[in-house]
Length: 148
Length: 152
Image 1 (cartoon, rainbow over the protein chains, first blue to last red):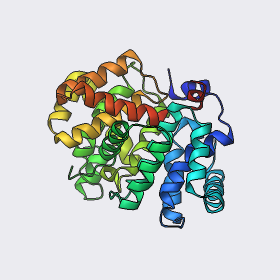
Image 2 (cartoon, rainbow over the protein chains, first blue to last red; image 1 turned 120 degrees about the horizontal axis):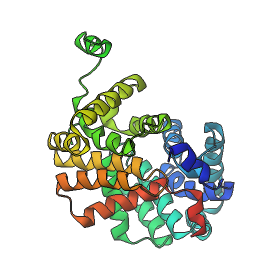
Image 3 (cartoon, rainbow over the protein chains, first blue to last red; image 1 turned 135 degrees about the vertical axis):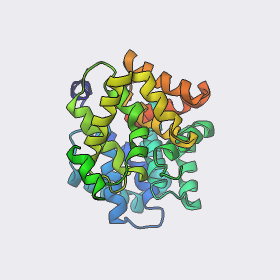
Image 4 (cartoon, rainbow over the protein chains, first blue to last red; image 1 turned 90 degrees about the vertical axis):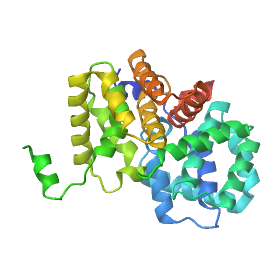
């Protein structure tokens, strides 16, 4: 079966689902209090290969990123993570955390602040440390350089 | 000498042997059902720009790498092509190669039997433990999960 026909079988996602999946990645990206346009573009490019964001365009995803950032500033980190955890199924909570780990490790360095945010998200979402460790190992393998 | 070889000789293209070895399991997985789907080619290109291994390598070169891998698989078979590519890689880059192959196999969260065979061949060559294989698979499936996972 081709990729296209596989993707057509997928249910079209709603925006609340997309917002909740993207929330941990945005939280990780704005850990320093700002949205770096280069990081935002990288995140959008990453998630556009996901079936959850199939059919979304770059402008819509950048707008969604800004909306989540504004929500974080209004209600705080804990509230938006709890909202996302409440919306998502256990499987999609893992997906959301994986995107966040990818963002955190995109530059090859995992800062203490990023790790703290990821640990907080995994706890709120009820994801075991052992599972999060396997996410780190796999993402590290995907982002390994030629010296690896 | 074909065009790609001429360009490479002229120094305009980099040596892509490492990238070819890393992508061999992914391409094997992609064509495991005997068909080369254009969209899956597009997927492979979308997959690699975030990898430092493919920094500076454009779509045209990725296509050339894919073509060379397909040619090798047709010449020696899937298992032998995977084995010779994997043995040329460090253990760490073998993991990277397996993860790329898994992303192709689990594009919608499920893998077909032929795709599973390619992954198993790679894991066997790597002497990868079942726990490590499962850890990679769990993450890749999570990355590829679609909106229907909200119902489960």
